[in-house]
Length: 303
Image 1 (cartoon, helix red, strand yellow):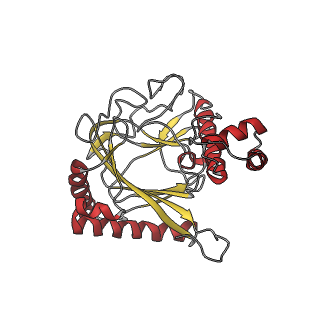
Image 2 (spheres, one colour):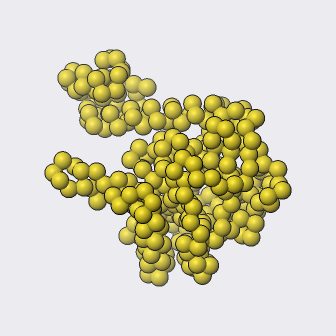
Image 3 (tube, one colour):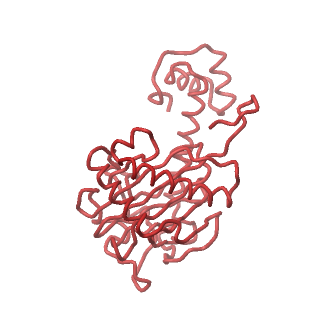
């Protein structure tokens, strides 16, 4: 743990002592972490915090009992909220078309199973076109209005990603093994809960990562407070499989993506979640993350 977090030269003993006080590390380990982070105390504290969150996430996944029930349902637990028809069918179609065209030109890979694209950054305009860029801006504002009304007016969007997952197509691999690998979205379909002993999602033993892995948003970005998902395609119509699942301690609660449906939830450890494998078709979703505007000490909140 004392190597490989950030990289860099050693730091004076006083900062190592402060890092040890902040994190509970012993002095020698704190000095090593500080060394790895180029002597930057704030960066070292943040790196160690993220490391702790990743460890906590792994523990939460490993603790999931394989005999938990699973069902397609939505319950307003752990702060989860759902809205329908936040975007129209025409808007969803336009968003998919412009997003697909953009990602064919320039996108990041989401492992081997999908493509992701940040539609909010200024550089996205050249790939989405003026109309597509404006549409994603409108959708982001519409989602923000509902999120702020539900969770607090001090929330501001800090990141967004458009994801495209397709079964064996341009968006990625999809389908294959793993939980619910062959299911449809029928209420009569048999679903099972994620089983950490069966559903290994990476080549590295004991790890779960990639597009379909259970995860906690705050374990990836500690500053996230609320997560939102706007579905741009519909399960059972545009794709099969691909349900969202909340991996709760007592059960897996699955949700069907529908055109224009918006899901929001607190980004913390109460909402371990995943996307189930896409079996056929194409799944499009716009994810937006919100952060509370915290006072920076000068009376101004960060934008």
